[in-house]
Length: 332
Ligand code: NCD
Ligand code: ZN
Image 1 (cartoon, rainbow, N blue to C red):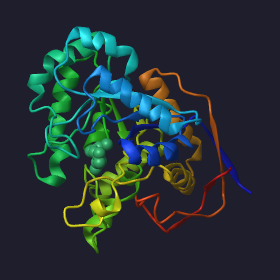
Image 2 (spheres, rainbow, N blue to C red; image 1 turned 135 degrees about the vertical axis):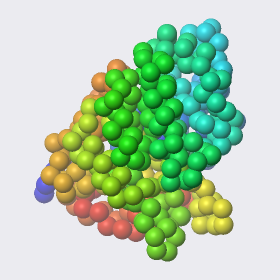
Image 3 (cartoon, rainbow, N blue to C red; image 1 turned 120 degrees about the vertical axis):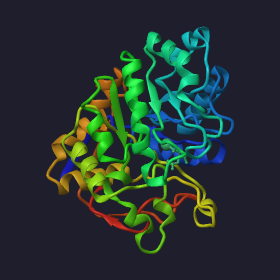
Image 4 (cartoon, rainbow, N blue to C red; image 1 turned 60 degrees about the horizontal axis):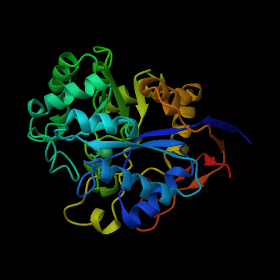
């Protein structure tokens, strides 16, 4: 049987939530990923060291015996030098949410101007900035494109600050990676596969609805090409964002696609289809290790070319492509 192995796969953008949802989803990621960048958009957000440490403890309890490194993030607000000095060793970066851009971002940054002092301290202390790059006031399809000028401004004004454009969805954002040395990006599984047509072109599919919304075929193709060629500044970040079924299959559907337990198998299938399996190790782990300069647990995941039917649900959460059959399974 055809086999394939990945070393220390990493998910550089993941939502673990809290309480019962954390207990459900964290082990599903930790079963195959060696580490992940944990998003801070809880209610209330992770914006103090006490909250960060207690959240990290909850994550450690939830993943129990799995070998998984949670790379923690703080929610960006104005922070003092003293606080950031003591936070530095506990975090991989700080996440900027424009106010109201997505799920639980109400306390986000009203203007980048207001955050500049904190950004300068982050630059001095070498703490990366992770960005939800959408302008919430723009038309929904243009929110990322409209934010690109802010990336220009940030990258120019803080040339020593590592800036990660999270979950990019446009060809323009891919092109920006080559314009500034200090810009990096993550891309999700769904944005490598789908366009807005899959979400709303026929019958509405709430399980493919997320922020930023999936875009045009040419955007998807640019993202896919950058992933399949293992662009050195592009990293995998699933943005797996679980919501209970009643928050998805309803009027007022929450944004977020749940992919954590199936992402690796689908990526293997996708990279094999494009004859690019030799690029997957860089995309899924090595690029992130180099870009963030991190140490990660030494794990291996073996895949076999054996059909796998994606479950209809994990607990109360419906995954992307529920019920569909894919070509690869995780062995063991
Ligand atoms: C995320 C969530 O549910 O927390 N939703 C989403 O659509 N991606 C928030 C986010 O990353 O934007
Ligand atoms: Zn996210």
